[in-house]
Length: 270
Image (cartoon, rainbow, N blue to C red):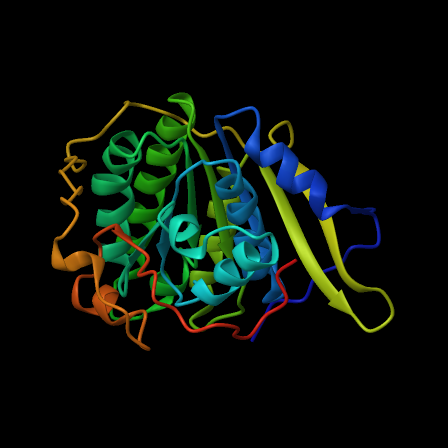
């Protein structure tokens, strides 16, 4: 069940404000949450950066990455879809431990390898709600990841975290979302109403956030590893209908999006 929200004291902002502020200047950590359209908006932001020739890395913990939206974006703007998709890389995580490894140990090094300063993380907390992972343990993982994100920001990297806020049981796990918010420079919420359609609200900025205590640039648990593969490796996949098959087989690796995607697909990315 999604958590209820109140926006009576907030004024909606244009999504273009979010898009432009995220791209430049570099070095920021934003949170975007709310209606499921947040994932379309995030991909629009990624596409805008890619249209300028900037590579993007995405870590997906909730299976919301939609390659069809990016393909359609390219075709509508008369861009070569295959060349366009060569600018985005995807890693998928199915547990909180895999998400930590992908973000802390692989993402910073991979961004350096592809000469990128932009990353997106979809559904970071989705895997943290799994009761098989002890609550105290996931709390510590989240705190470590917030430190990693602050270090990435200090290195001039911009990171957008896109996730849904849920009311979960046991209720103690709802504290995770508040912890996540506390480490953000800006927090945006997207609402969908019958009267107004989708509306974006800027809920807080870095001035409102609780300062994060940074004790080290990198803890002993963070061991960067090489993730780049030579072109021709089977990580790049083949033209097939299941564009995620290689991600399932090799989770936590950042790989190129296969170019042979079906035309069209769900969503309204403009």
